[in-house]
Length: 126
Image (cartoon, rainbow, N blue to C red; front, side, top):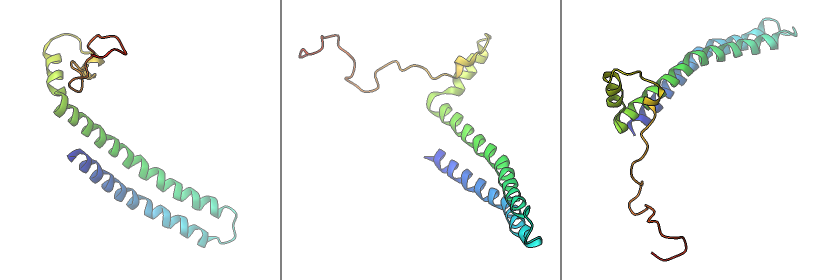
């Protein structure tokens, strides 16, 4: 639940920064048609200014959101699966560390009690 709150806060911060970055370009896009009211290039320049603001804002805020999401994912795996202990053990083992160290461990027991197959034939009562 704390991870979700952190992600929501990060998205709100990123959207505020994005809107602050896009605002001057949006106003520029609105003011360009006033500079030359009848010119055919005005609408293209207006759209280009708005597009440039959107691209700039996205180039700065999307990596921030991806970074926050990645940090929250790794934190969640460290808390639930002990990924930090697994990485430490792999580091101290002295062998080469491959990408398999990041894979989650396979489940050793059935997820719910009583769901293990007993070996009887299908259709017969147990």
